Each structure stands twice: as C-alpha cells, then as structure tokens.
Image 1: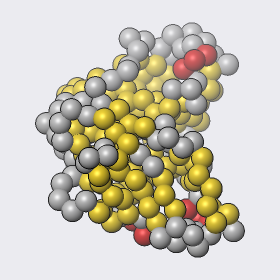
Image 2 (image 1 turned 135 degrees about the vertical axis):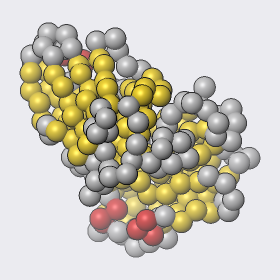
Image 3 (image 1 turned 180 degrees about the vertical axis):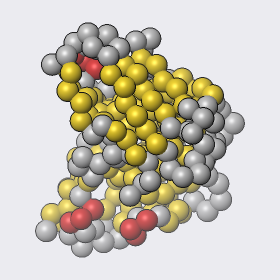
Length: 114
Length: 114
C-alpha cells in the first residue's frame, strides 16, 4: 500500500522568513511525488513534482522541494514566505508502473503572518 | 484557471435523493478523475476514466457511479444520498492518466445533504 504523512496540521511563519512544509511517504517501488496547494473555495492547484533525476525540484511561485530517498521525505520549501502563500498544502504520491492512483496526505494549513 | 469546469458549484438536496455532478476536462486531456473531500476523511480518490473507459477505482460506494462520454466530459451520479455524503466533490483531468502526470483540478461541487 502507498501512503503519505504530513505530520503538521498547521505551520505558522512570519512574512519574509523561510518556510518548510513536511511530507514523508511510503511506497513499494519508485515514487512520483507531488505538491498541490488549495486556496479557500478553490480546487487543488499543482505546484511541482518529482519523477526522477535531480533531488531538488523547482516549481511555481518560488516553491521548491527536496526528494530524500533514504528518509522517504519530500519537504516543500520557500526561501522567503509571502502572506499570499497562506493556504492548504497537500503532498501526494503515486508509483511508477502501478495502476494505483494518487494518494494524498491530510494537508498542512500554512499561515504566513505579516 | 485550471481549465477544468465543474457544475453545479453548489447542490443542496435531501436524504434519499439522487444527484448528478458534471465535469468538463481541460482541452486535450483524455483522463478524468473524481475525488471526494471531507473534513473527517480528507481527499479520497473515487474513480478514474480514460477516453471513455474506466481505468481505476478507489473508495467509491456502490451507490455512486460515473461515466465518461465520447466528448470526454464526465458525470458522477450519487444516489440514495445519506447525510455522510455531504462533501466537496472534485473532478481532475490529465493528458493520458499516467501516474507521473500532474492532475488539474476543477473548483469542485459542494454537496449538502439536509
């Protein structure tokens, strides 16, 4: 079975500070990892993905994520947070060669304080 | 704007009733997914279609059914509705449904059962 854990329900950070949203995963096989963001009353919006290659992946709006195979983690990061980054963030995993679809984490509410 | 259109945005109905949710995928996308988002269960994958054929099934109840039509739009039918079916229902689409492809989400249909 594949699963995703987002250990923090809520992350608060001051504007201008770096932010990290944590994600760990469990799969059998090679993972494909994704981050999505959800603003109030909106659908999920794709931010970035890891398929293979460079462990540091850059995505939309200045976000990046680092794939760490030994720690089975895929943490989302941004060097300088904006108030407009406040939203619900979801990590998701699928597996290469598997018919199973995306499995989402429970989400982390990010609040950037002015 | 993701390019995925869902109608209606809101639906209020009573227990025991039947409703149909509609989704138009992004132009060029052949695969459609349905998800249910609720506070207690998080984001749950229901079902996936590719070019009119069912490709994968998740946690979809027997009271629920879906189909994808030749013009690639999809409908999710929910019958014998129960209070617990109140949730946000999202449709997403991707080019071919391969597990490494990002999915693009609509803004959802909020279903309220009274």
